[in-house]
Image (cartoon, rainbow, N blue to C red):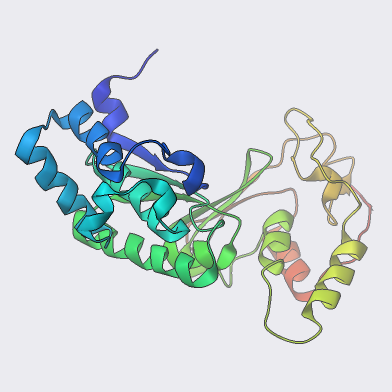
Length: 261
């Protein structure tokens, strides 16, 4: 059924593309006023005061209130998106790839701001990203999905040493390293280990990563739902392979092979 206004207020979202998330014909004050009027019923002086407070929270000058989105930089627009989410006083903010459209320095400043606001306001984030370094820096609890299917969950402390589902292994190894030859090295390893399948094949009940997995087991992975392994430190992996076998993949960068049950 439809959510109540209170349910809508408690969960807000900051979108990936700051440009398309803001109405180009409205001033920043008008954009921030809408949730304040909708959820808090503010108007007049109280409304203006709260808009000013929100701009302070996201570290934007008061002059931004009179400007249109076109007059702001990408980082400033994303700060406005965050201020609009905060206007509802939410319990949870969904952050959908909020730094992927920004350059590195601006994106880092947005992450610092998110961390600061979490401490000041006690708000929680659900942070959606393919950037493993960002995820590791921001998130306390991590859930890894492939084609909408949960393949692993872990906490930040277990990120470096936990056994990894083959997709999580691929994702973590795709993070660029600042050393000569890394691109050629990782490209060759991935071409050797993974078949050229760009999109997952929908097979109900089976592992969504089946057609790309270098550790798939013939007669098992293609016929049974992957079990959940509950490992030390609160780690969960959904895979037919054991924790020891997954750790071996991380050590050896396994070659592709089909194994019989």
